[in-house]
Image (cartoon, rainbow, N blue to C red; front, side):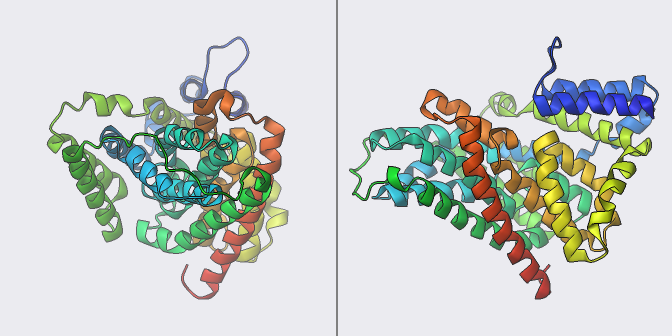
Length: 412
């Protein structure tokens, strides 16, 4: 047990901090080292470690990354965002357009990819319109996080929820699409209020930014493959194999060598997931996860609604410490013991995703947007936190209330 605690502690400190002093470890490398140490210290056998890696989650993520890679190669994200943003005529409507464009695209595909593709377009449009970039960059980051709540393929933590909980794609979307939509409205309202002095009431001149040129043959094939994947999800086919089938089909008919699409895959993220699965299995076998859960049991009570509310607040806090993906993996050890696991899983997916808007480090989407913007973002940790706290509190309150309303109506 001592070895498991030591490995778990070192791994999670490295994951939370991003790296450790005197060691050239980033998050994926830390997770891989933690997995290896769980075996080397005797906490897990090699067979147990291999069995702990959830192939369904990795397969789903890989399949969606490949589909996103082909859509990105066809310039779908940039063309779509350019058309949406170029159609608005006032600074405030532009803010709303960024939020909903980011949210809608993130609900369909992985939000991190959306941020990578859309950030340059947002920067070009606001620069051309002579507007401050910060409100629109936050609209992109917050909107992508909020919109990704809607589906199991919207973000990595939702994918884990889907594979661990067994909730179908259709049932998940039916429960969380409305909370996601309401969260997008709340994000836009909060940002409009916070930045009201930076959003002048004037008509924007037509943008002079050139429209990205689509690769139409590739786009048609990639969209068809993506549509087949979504149809398979809704029909109840296994998520991972449906995504991989659609991705393999797209590779076969794309009309180009698949190397470039494969190079766009975030392989370190897959290593990160695989390592975390093994680390969490190690602390589960050692009984540490059970003891951690016992610490919050007195606050949970026995009512399903109270349990979900308390566990959601716990999720928000813990996601800031160890990040949302590792926390959701840990939650897989605890949620089956709650009174109504399905409600708890849905509430956890909500909380873990919306908690990403609380701090700069709360979501990879935040880091992508601000890093790509560079000095043009112009926001420090504490200012981000003040705005993010408003957005997080408001979206969680509204979305959780909607989820409970759906439960009362028998829709969850």
